[in-house]
Amino acid sequence: MQLARGGSVQKYLKVAEISLTNRVVYLADHFASSIFLILILFIFSQLWKTVLGTNAEIAGLDSTGMLWYMVFTEVIAVSTPASHSLVSEEVKSGDIAYRLVRPYSYTLYYFAVHCGEFLVRFITNLTIGAAFAYLIMGPLAVEWVHLGWVLLGFALSTAINFLVSFSLALVAFWLEDNRPFFWVLNKLIFILGGLFVPVEAYPEGLRRVSYLLPLRYSFSAPARLVVNFNYAFLWQMLAGQLVWVIILAVLVGAMFRKGVRQVHVHGG
Image (cartoon, rainbow, N blue to C red):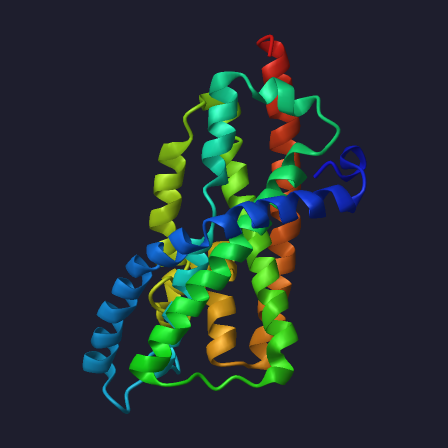
């Protein structure tokens, strides 16, 4: 991901700080947009109450656990910035040429922007979602000793989400309009990401497919870890997340280098 060319980590931390500060200015807007999140959680809270009642479970989670599971998967989904649209616009407008000559890594710059914006969105959406789930279903029992592992899982989840989105965003080097790819990705997140139901509840064939793809490690796995912490599950999740971070980082690096040559060939 162009670490050598990008220089010190300090500059990217500053970029992330600027991105975070810019989003804090619009904090009221973020809270207002959480109304959609509340609507989704309300609908599914009624569904789980009706379907599961007080005793039934899905993949080891009762109705309360299922709602809290959805709080975390939905918060991850709605908090993820649409960085791909910026890349597409830069390619179309030609501004990409100015970005490429600046003394920082193009990929790491957008990762820093992504993290800063995601953090603000995540905190506001989680505050609203957790408050709603607490009022409707009751508290979630979380042991503070596990908090460090949970945060690590969410950090790796954020990295995977960014790398998946950015790899599709780089398709703009060849096709300019990358929106259709993100339409497909959004649909895959619903199923293979386990957005509504843990992938462990899927039929064996579909479950195996989800285990082989990165989306499960971005949404379902970290959410399930919070709701039902288990060390065996933790090690399996972290191993999968680390493998996918490496694979996707290599893929993004290769796509970026090839895409830059494409720009140069066309006189960009």
